[in-house]
Amino acid sequence: MNIFRTIPSVLVILLILTGCGEQETNRRYIDQQRYDIEQQEQELASLKKELEKLKNEVIETKIEKGLEKYILTLDIRQSRFSLDIEQHIKDKVNAIQIQLPVDKEYYDRLEIGDVIDDSFRMGSFILTCSYGNWKITVADKEIK
Image (cartoon, rainbow, N blue to C red; front, side):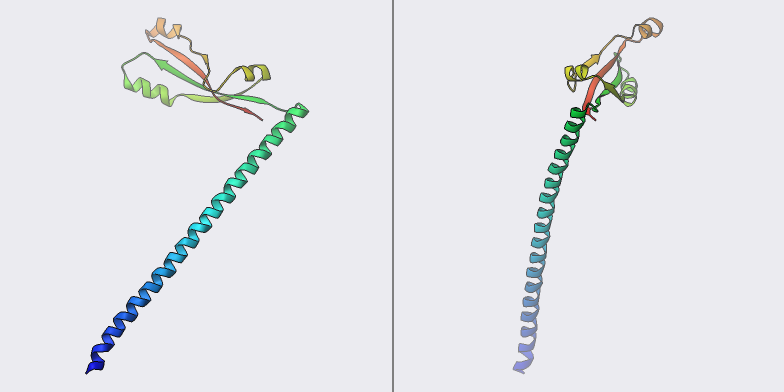
């Protein structure tokens, strides 16, 4: 009779010990995965640095050979003096960006965020009594 009482106790102890082993195995697996992710992130950072270095070398080579192009990305949008929220949404949605090649002197003179034109739209004011303007700003600069 004592043997029947000890068998369930032994089974419970075996189940507990088996569960602990699985937890330890899972913990080691998770730690290995974290280590692998960390290693891959470090490798990715290294590759990004190398890519940036290569891009700079290409640009320097183009400049040395006189093959570079100076590109400005311009943000063009309309702005109105109005209390109509629909007009403001329309102006925001209709904003466009275009890229233009420019000469080096003009490229060097401008910075990102500079306003190139912020002129009043006289024709719209006269014909439709709409008070607004065009706003053209430098959104990005790059050398290709």
